[in-house]
Image 1 (cartoon, rainbow, N blue to C red):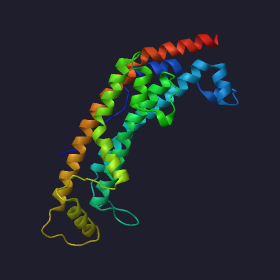
Image 2 (tube, rainbow, N blue to C red):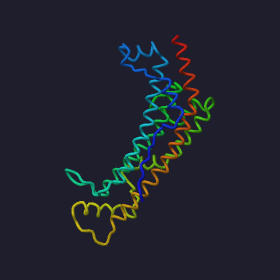
Image 3 (cartoon, rainbow, N blue to C red):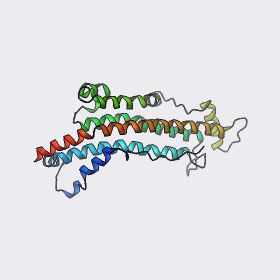
Image 4 (cartoon, rainbow, N blue to C red):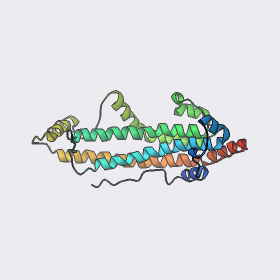
Length: 248
């Protein structure tokens, strides 16, 4: 099986083009503002665009950061060679799993921040969750809530897995027996001979399972996030124009 490289990003979203058209070639270092407050008071529409843009880029970055996982699964030499100590198959897969769980599970939370920033809801970080977003915009933006519910649903199983990993310490690598796989992986990295255990097949099956799940879940989540950000284009343009008119 070939681990294809996936160019995950938000390039296909309409929102990205609108954002770039709005912000144009505006750079803060071209202006003599002493602080953010001064900038926001003088050009509130551009300050708003920068804040929303930062949230959008953070959201996109999480998808881009998932790309490296396919590269890690496709390394040509395992155990992975290191100047200090080679990384065995077990620790390599576990590191990939940790990376996937953290980055994938964060996309829902960053989506909440994006909506909160764009709609100027000013919900505090510690109170920013789906329930409070529903209270704030369910009547005015029911479709946005539907998209957020979909995003939350796609990542639910992975977030649960992340929480178990973070708070309990358990990691499921997807082998038939992770403890046996761990034992022989350590032995292989130490130069020992492996008898009566096909470690290459165990690693290959676990890697393929992790890859297929990553691609399926990420493609689904990417589609849902693009739908969310594109649905917010009219709101972004409206608030931008309101702030621009206020400035005039």
